[in-house]
Structure formats: structure tokens, C-alpha cells
Length: 196
Image 1 (cartoon, rainbow, N blue to C red):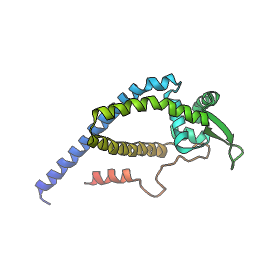
Image 2 (tube, rainbow, N blue to C red):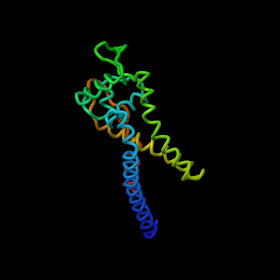
Image 3 (tube, helix red, strand yellow):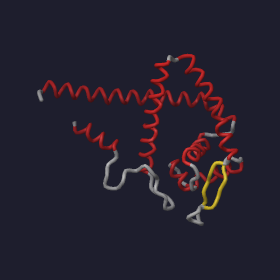
Image 4 (cartoon, helix red, strand yellow):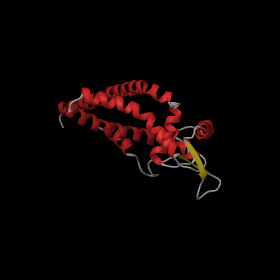
């Protein structure tokens, strides 16, 4: 490889990292702006950010132990106790005995809780859908749909990174960490970029 070729590759990699950083900044700002615009509707339903995140976990994953919910939120169980009690009192959640461990309980969305959660999102979803229909072409909608899939990957990677860093609590190991003796894909990519 000539010196000129090596310099060209170095410039390309540097520009790639800069583009990724700029993209990350724009993504964070856009996500924060969208969240701010949609937050009032959720607040009217009595759902704070923490409550919404807890309900979202249960909606996606099904019944969980309080310890597993806390691990998913990257908080201590004691910090979540009041939130769970409030959601239970408001009819969003119900508790049952763990089928395999009588010392633990399972928390699940009630039927009414699922309905109210979907209702809370419906108005905001409809507003965003109208904007997409009015402002974007079919090609742009397809591009936006692909971008959403990429955002989901980023969100999962961030969740995995947080789970890997968080210590297990109450015998529950947060999911998403790379198995012992193996390196996660993101870390392998980072090391490969550094080596180049």
C-alpha cells in the first residue's frame, strides 16, 4: 500500500467517525424535540417519563419481576418501589406470585392498563401520522421506515451496553451482555476501526 493510499484511507475513516458523531448529535436533538412535542399528551394521561418507561417494558416483554424491571431501567429496586405502587394503585399493573419462586412476585399490565396505554399514545401517533402523510413522499416514507429500523438497533445496542455495565441485583442478571469469553459486535467493530 502506498503512502498516498494510506493517507486516503485515514482521511476516509476520520471523516466517517466525524459523520457518525454529527449524526449522533442530530439524532439526539431530533429525538429530544419529538419527545418534548409529544410529552404533553402523555402528561395529561398521568404518565411521567419513568412510568411510561416501566409500562413500555411490560408491554413489550410481558410479566417481569420488580428486580428485572429495575435492571431494565438501570436503577436500584428501592428507587422503583414507589413508581410500581402508584401504577398499581392507578390500575395499570397487577401483581401475582412467581410460579417458580414464592419469594418473588411478577408484575404485569392489566387489561385496562394496556388499553389506557394504547389510548395515551394514540393521539400523538395520529398527529405524527398526519405530518408524515402531508409532508413526505412515498419514497421518503420508505426511507423513514428504514431509519426507524436503524434507530431500534441503536436503542437495543444502548440497552445492551447499559445492561453489561450494570451489576446484577437480587440474583437477576440483566440481559443483553455478551457471553463470558466473547466480545460484543459493537466492541469488535470499534477495535477493528482502531486497528486500521
